Length: 184
Image 1: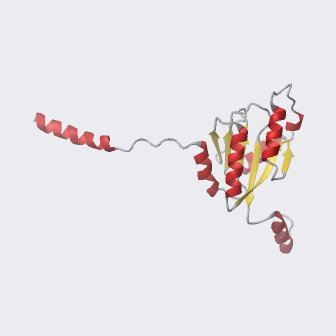
Image 2: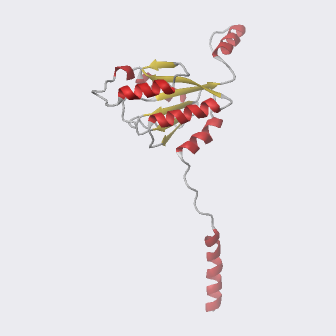
């Protein structure tokens, strides 16, 4: 009887010995690389400072990168630029040019670094509250990927509204004119 009990116990334990180890969580870089092929026009990717609010809309996924904002921005822009289907429409907080080094040490260097990183694309400015409201509204229908960084510079977030790389704003405008409507 004791032998049978030992054999049964052994047989029950064997599968646990061969079970696969739990999957390691994906790095933020891997999660971005995994998400971008699924994103398209009207989706958003936000690279935000550490105090950016955790939004609760179901269409918003927030990833804590624990990385410098410029590092995350460089990676995301590279991934978007290398994609076949995406191009960025970039927005930044209108408040940023008015933030001083006295109030936020390092802001001047940050602005210079971001200007360099974004030199290939036009950047639009909008009030921070308006950008958050727009993202909130869009997240009810479209996916928003928020990449939280360790930046402690206020109003340093970069909002990337994705568009189709293979379809220009001019082509969309011509299409709408042909259809007799100026709006998408």
